[in-house]
Image (tube, helix red, strand yellow):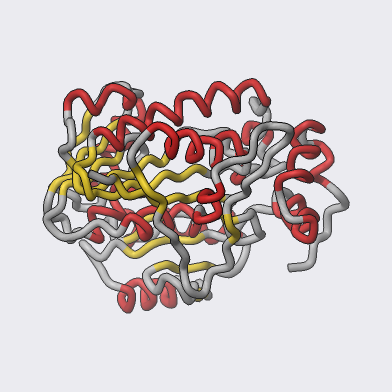
Length: 323
């Protein structure tokens, strides 16, 4: 991609820019900062409960939309052309209105892939709304088993229910309560759990959308990291011994990523499972941040996805609960 803006990222908070320079590999810094200046292409996921890849590809062709798929996920599509125009065409299409597709950034599709929920299993989505990953997991499970999709906000629960219905999901139950207390209601109940935690959203920043960074602060990062710890601990307590938990965020901040995993490794009887996706460039977790004590060396097994012109920044870790 040819960038036409000159350092548009300079409008971002100076403290954020300074932190990025210390977090990311030096050779990636310019690419990452420039990625914040551009609207990413429209990407979508096929809902195999209602359609299939071939049918969606044909529908895209009929709309005159050029497309391709990432090598690591055949049921995802990347649309070429102006993102605003392609998104408008998609949202007016019958396949969108019928729930045959779900508009979703590619990075957001990774946590469910890493969790790999199985047919007829019990799965927790502890911070589920608006439902992109919940519906993806239900699709992977062929709408079998049981998913408990939890969220605290009544508005977000309403959106979650609408998305579940639109995607044809029936084996998912919504639940509204503070996630950090959910383990008391479902002790050692689930086979797998997803903790896609509320975060500072650094990986989704877009300079033309000031709301994407207007509330950013180091203070907020510290507040969020405390909440994230207890959401993850609750999900682990709600998972049976031998079960698996995926923790993910869409931020770069080590306090919300490796810092949370380092904390949970010291608190719970869990182990990190090495993860990777063939065909997708990812980076290991970082073991040192600032002047703090180094993180547990095992956090290198976590996955960092740095922002590009195509993908949002994400962090993913997979844990196994030991007996």
